[in-house]
Length: 93
Image (cartoon, rainbow, N blue to C red; front, side, top):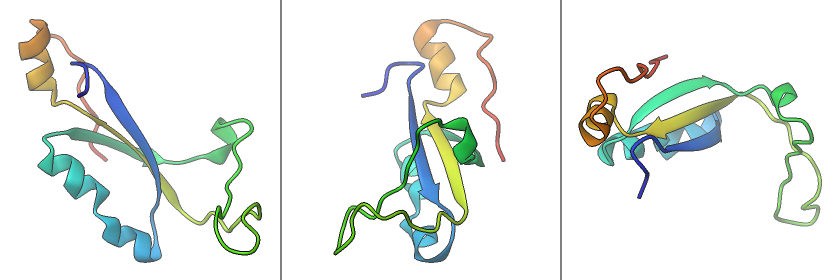
């Protein structure tokens, strides 16, 4: 349901049990390319994390290590859909 140049952005904890969620594998099986970078809370003014569950849902939790993923259609497919030959390359990290 993405447009030719649309992207899905996901910020995801990158340690412990959260590594088993295979977000990248799910995106790959859906035919999406990905970019990945470290998540820096300072780049998101006003961002607050919350438990959203249990006795104290508004309490913040230890953020730990996060990755920010950007998923989109492969550049070859984009060029076929749009007729463009000079799409920016997706960065693999």
